[in-house]
Length: 411
Image (cartoon, rainbow, N blue to C red; front, side):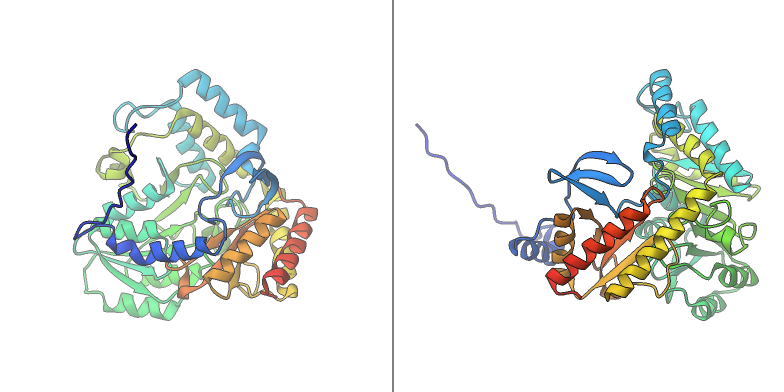
């Protein structure tokens, strides 16, 4: 019989993980308080766009970005099954090699029809769409003027392209113009905006911002990840809602929100856009989406064109939840509902985590968002509504928030 020796490993000098020590300590402190890990929830079974089994309990889903509830649409599922049977489980190659199947072209055709644009390019994720497009068109010596609350993928695209990053205060039209005014004459300029900002769910003043960008000769890219399918008469996003869809140069989006699957895209009317397929590294050097995924995406996109009734119901859900939480005494990220995201501001991370866990025990899942991802160091409980949430479910959600809020001492 041999003795079992448990070794304690001491990190070596120059440990590359030492930069994460503060975050590791914050996480350990949080878990030591007895709170369940809010960033490691397992869904044991997904029952519908609005329900799943978590910790053995049926739970209402209010943090999935499944805005239009397309994940269980019968036509979408059938399209995926047919493509899986006919074309197999994956492409095993890049789009520029063997990875372009008929389904990829059909998906891009659906996007062109949806937006009324000349060009569409599908990426393997929405993150890669931003990374690839931004890094390719804005390089060394160019300037990217962007909202300081821009998504991580936008910042990463700027870094990868090595462009000069010029941030401005969130949704501040005057601050954006000041930045543009200071850029050297003749330099390449790209203004990057988002239709809906994912943390607080607030909408950008695109009409004014796009007009100013054009006045200074800048190209404009708008990320519509959180507005596609829902905002605008035809679900084309804030660009459509504010009447600037024909004035922007690029619209970036994702399939992992309203479309209900995974992938990303860029649409554009620029006459030279097709060269991007040969020079955009995250497109050229990444395996393309599986045929079943692009089939579900194409089917979902075409159905979203006719989703007016769903959009109307989702707006009603958003207004009801926003008013109900305000009436209960919660502090929200926006004074009025602006999107399908309703952000509830927490006093701090510890009580935010306690509130998150209390809601989960009630049978409700929301997102716990913390710094540095959130603006102004806020801790948020981020609710994302779905067109498949019934009016009754929204009332149930409000009751859960009331009980949990009182139990934790937030209200």
